[in-house]
Length: 91
Image (cartoon, rainbow, N blue to C red; front, top):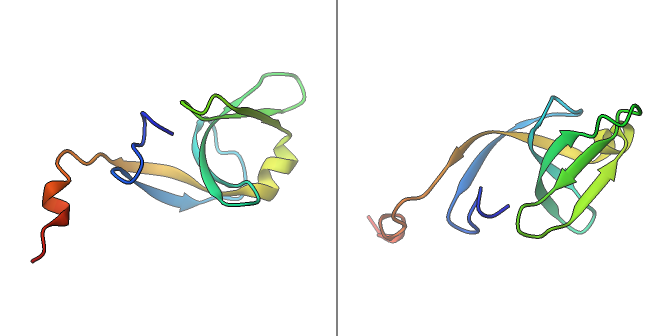
């Protein structure tokens, strides 16, 4: 999800969900691992959803039913690390 979340530097606070709650960033079980996707309505008349990742360039189209079977949570807050040197210091 770079640049929104920089790998191993930024953190997300998630709330559990079992269905589409509107546009946002969701944690989805894609089979081999859990991954973050930006999810939006496709407005295709069938309730389809578009799942995308910024730099990976891949986009998935899922029905709401399939999405409900795979969704784990929604990002409700993010923490952007400004200087990771201070995270690595031992107390």
